[in-house]
Each structure stands twice: as structure tokens, then as C-alpha cells.
Image (cartoon, rainbow, N blue to C red; front, side, top):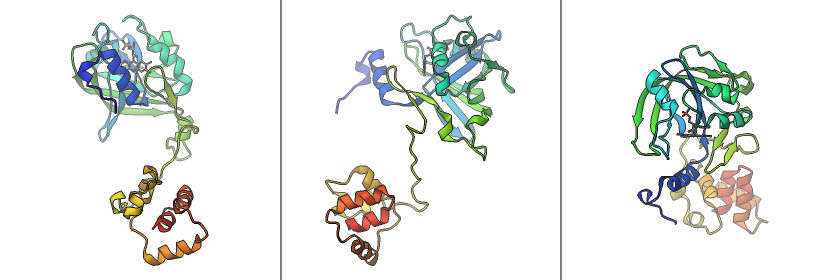
Length: 280
Ligand SMILES: Cc1cc2nc3c(=O)[nH]c(=O)nc-3n(C[C@H](O)[C@H](O)[C@H](O)COP(=O)(O)O)c2cc1C
């Protein structure tokens, strides 16, 4: 493995590794205002949800890598303690990118990017009309992580009101992941897009607890053919099959000689217990 000691790399190089390795990252399009009511809008991918109760989002406008100066978003939040975080979908990509330009302090990125400001209900910063999900937030805490260039600032935001476009809801008013088309930031200039081509569904492990890979028979656990994913699936069942079950299944497939190949086919069909039986 290639080893990196963060303290031995220039910030720009380290950032390439960090952003390439922690990816994809969702994008918060943060709308703020300063004490005089001047609007600001900028995207941040150091962002996620960290609590449901209370509902908390955290994002991090970092000090400039070149000048160590704080970003306008950070300064505005220091002044007013409010932010609207807008989710970003594929249709918003290039306007969002434009909003990330380093415009001067007195420039309104709503105007520059062409996004439409909509009044919020509980906070002063505006929502972005084009965004399918808009979180009106109160900033509860700011944690400054340093004074050098690249130092982040954790903006801990409590969600006070959520607006969701009907376009991404299903008939039960739940978010349909096939409709969101969110974009996310990768390393370098790469992005990814969440649509049905890139998503896949994985059922949660059984309601009961899986036996775990350590409880699989050694012949399966130490197989040179089975993959980690296959072992994970096999070990997700709640108990090893009984002797009679194993015999019945083996009888069913007695014409197959390559048991790992057969198990692979059965796993692909979701027949985990049968796969385990033929391997035992
Ligand atoms: C997709 C995307 C994600 C970004 N994520 C961050 C981030 O997490 N933290 C950060 O400090 N800057 C990030 N930036 C850069 C800021 O958007 C940029 O510095 C912007 O000018 C800050 O605006 P402000 O000074 O008006 O707050 C990102 C840019 C893009 C395009």
C-alpha cells in the first residue's frame, strides 16, 4: 500500500488525495445573507447529515488555500447564524458551478448564476427555486479547525423547515430515489450523478442477525474462489442449514460438478440458503 503522512505533503497535494478518497460527496448550495441583507450563494461538498433528532446538517467552508482568508459564506453565518441549504440536481450543474466563482463580497451569486431567489418562511436567507430540496436552517455552532490555508470550519446547522418538490416524491409523499438525479463531487474535476443507471438496491440484512463470516465452515470461509461479497451474502443468513436441508438441495443439483459456480448462480438469483447448501 502507498503510504502518506499528511504532515509531509503540501496542502494542495494532500487535498487531491483526501477529495479523491472521500467521494462521492453530496453538494450543499448554501444561501446566506450578511448583516446588511446582501445575498450570497456558494456550493460546498464537505457536507452531510449528522443527526436526525435533532435534524442536523454540517458543511465546511474552508479558509482559502492561497490566502487563508475566510469565505463570504462563513463571514455571513458569523454575522447572522442562518443558512438555507439547497440540494443540487443535474439540471442545476452549470449554474451551481458558476456560483462557486470567487466573486467579490458585494456580488449576489443569485444574479450571477441566474438561480431564482424565493423567500424563506423561518429564516432570512433565500431559497433556490430550482433546487428540489431546500432546508431552512439555524446555525447552532461553528467550529473553526485552524487558521492556516485549507483549514475547515464546521457549520453545524439545525434544520427548521424542509421544502421538497413534488417532482421527486412518490404517491406516498416519500422521496423516490429514482427521481432525485442529485449530483455529487468526486476528486479533481469529477462529478457523479444519481440516476437509475448508477444506483442499485441492496436489501437490509435479515431482521434477525446474520451468522457472520467467522461462523461459515472453513471450506467456504477459506475458499480461493468465492469473493468477499459472496461470503458476506452467505453469512447474512440467520442459521446454518440443517443436514436434511443440505442433502435435499444437493440432490436437486446433483448434475452440477462445480459447486462454487453453481453457488454463484444461486447467489445471483438471491437463493442464499440454497447456495450455502450446495457449498456445504
Ligand atoms: C461542487 C463544489 C464543491 C465545493 N465544495 C467546497 C467545500 O466543501 N468547501 C469550500 O471551502 N469550498 C468549496 N467549494 C469552493 C467554493 O464554492 C468557492 O470557494 C466559493 O467561491 C465560495 O463562495 P463564498 O466566498 O461566496 O462563500 C466548492 C466548489 C464546487 C464547485
